[in-house]
Length: 125
Image (tube, rainbow, N blue to C red; front, side):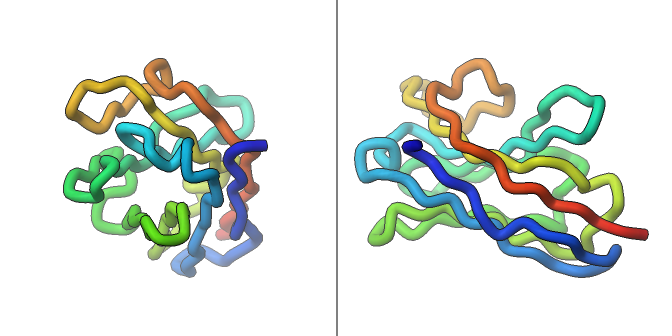
């Protein structure tokens, strides 16, 4: 497994979780890293993404102002800080790497080449 997400769990609405994505140096050199989520019975959707250097980030409208994506280049780690969680944030969260050289952080899953196993986030009301 080249990407491994962790940090999920059960939290009450309004609470916080921090997800981590551990990967190899090669995968971490991708143009961008993204977090996606999939709720039960729904399609996978983009949550947040960050460029290789960390200067560009992108967020889904549903998580703007609540989620923050970051990366630690020394540790080959990508993080997703999730605050003010809502029940609709429940789902399996996965990290992915995009090697397409587009200069932007892609917000659809098609360009992402490598995917890791997800971690389950459950937000209770």
